[in-house]
Image 1 (cartoon, rainbow, N blue to C red):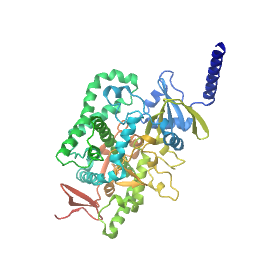
Image 2: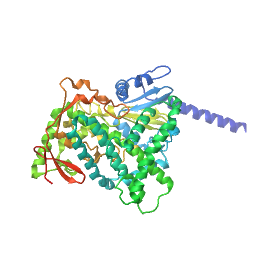
Image 3: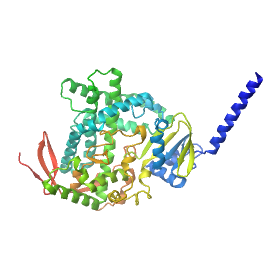
Image 4: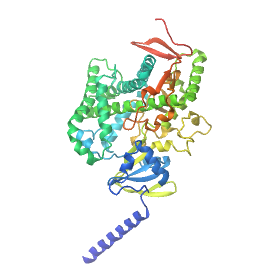
Length: 517
């Protein structure tokens, strides 16, 4: 018996020694030194655009680094090859989400945005794919084009309010795709509920758990907002379906089912949660892309002029009167602008995942091998990838021409929509908008008719007064003062009456006129 116990102890000691020796030989990624208590938290929080600070760390320590936030380490990756290896080829180990105490308190932990990887997450992904696959997404094209037309009408009538128009445009597309609901104005209660939720979620999701708990006095209020965000639009769809007047939408497609069978209550609850996340996230991401587009057209008028010339020439050929999504292949420069918008200011500059139960001791980054412990937070600095001067020369410049050379760099759509099993699934209500399709990927419906108006900075302002790095999602986006932008109309538009109850705006070569009814 003593021999058996001795063998067990010796074997255990040898295994422990082998494990310690291996983990000692394979180090974790390097990183900046931090405060003894706060780590790198104060530096990162004080940077404003924190992805820029993470990029500065990468310049010093390499494309895979570790940062310490209080007592926890996070690993930041800015190498696309390693990101693809981990999140695509090893996706089973890198598709989890960090647990968030506030999300549990407000009842948000079971929504797909925060859902842990597992059977429930897979089921939600399947539901998303069923309602948002390439074939189903074709049903949403007319309604998205409709909203673009309404945006252009508002821009013509009140150009100085373009920021508000963009926000309404974004919310309208998200609501119509998610629920088939038409938003009449920004004061609509559905919009205001989504705004309240967006503000609360953006504030809370970036607080560490030890700071979130004292905010429990807000939990009841936030739970009420989240309840309204889920329930009221969902009830609207049920009412419309009962009367046979429901517009095609994400929710209606799922509720109808593939075989007409009734849906159990738990599945309905899942649809409700997915749709709410889909709607609220979709509005913010569209705002980011469209505002970046307007900013680029303002700061780079020569780029806008080239696109205008391409559009005018195309419209003038064969007496064309309208630009449709299928025309994108004949508009290379305009399509390159869409790519460059996504590269210049990625919609989501940092993507976050979490590793699962097992240590990964074979993380190759460049010519080095690192160890990433189990249950670690892994962040991909997409912004830093898109700012790599070795891949994109003069990355701070807005240059669509970079994608028109014989050997163009990788398109940003390969990275900006996420990685692996948490990548965006061709979602028209999130980051994908059906207006221009680049290499098989649907990308934000940047309103191309806006190219037909000139935008410029007021004489008293310069481009340097705008912090372009902060033009991104709500959490970090700082809107330029609307007075900075002064529209200089040079319309290549015509108003017609082809769409019921709304004037359809079509691009033509010439002045602005109205076709007689």
